Length: 506
Image (cartoon, rainbow, N blue to C red; front, side, top):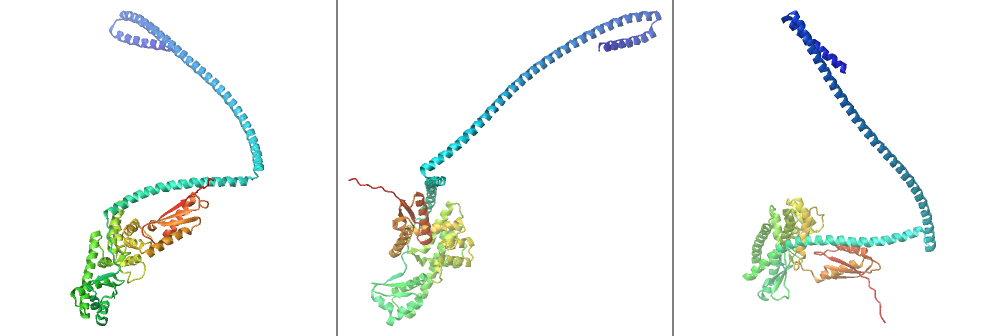
């Protein structure tokens, strides 16, 4: 490396000297040129020596730096070798430890296998000894254990079912009370029509003779003109009008009152008065229907349907005024639907028309719900409303939430105190049927219908029915009551299971 540098420097010096010689040859004489060249050569030789020395110094420095770098790298390599050596030693120690642990684990596994074999042998011996002592086989012991587990599980299940049902019942009843109470508070009404037959008061008993007429001509004329039976009996100062058609009965009542007020009672007059009475009643029917539609806000109904609604003004059911009932049911259904975010107009339309068939049940046979649905379809009422009408007594399946709401609203209006009257005979029959139905179940000791037939309490034999069985029995009785009895509102079924221990101190 140093030789190459020296040659390079000499080559450069020669080139420089050659250049200078060429320049001097052009300007100086030969002696001057020689002297000048000698001087230049001395200078060049001196400069070359300086350059060579400097180059040697630089080369020496570079060599020293290279040796230092090599020494540092050797030191690093030695340290890395030392670190790797320590790591290999550590790995070797760990390997030895792992091998030692594996040997210990193998020995532990062998010991465990031996212990497992001994335990199995001991277990077999213990089972044999238990079988010898108890006289039971494994299958018999399993059966006893399963029976015990089943009893415990049944008790736990009964307790869990009671807790879940109680929680769900509390939440459901709370929400239902809020919705229904809100609706009932806004439609509080206690008026109930009283008439199933029409009673016409007379100013005196002499009027009975004038109503009957000579050889009964007047009473026959009245009955023929109105289609109503006129009953004149021993009731003081009153006659009775009887007919399955409430509109005809109302026409007869209005006509008879006019005849009594006028005093002129004869066949020719009777026909004219009956015609005027029919016009008045028809106008009242139309007005009642329109008023019901206006009051409930249900629009778009066919005029014939409005007329049939008006006829419900003179119809009663269990002493309850049917037109007032459907109006009240409409308001209830609308408010419940609003509380539950359902279709308010659909619920109100179905509720208003749900008893439409009662206006013609004296003319057609069949369930009034199905009759009303057929009439509604005939006059173009939408099918969802027709389904509400047909399903409100479960003759058809309810296909919408609004149909269920109408059923609830109908029950609320029909079951509230004072809404309907029930004969003593019908009440006694219903209570008796309720108790007989409860007594028909196995394990029932006694049953009592209380709260005017709104609740039945069943006392069961505790040795035949357990807690879970009592829960199932209450559900079965409630289901049978729903399927076999007709009643307004709801009936509470309470099953009581009681265990008593009695001893006498002598």
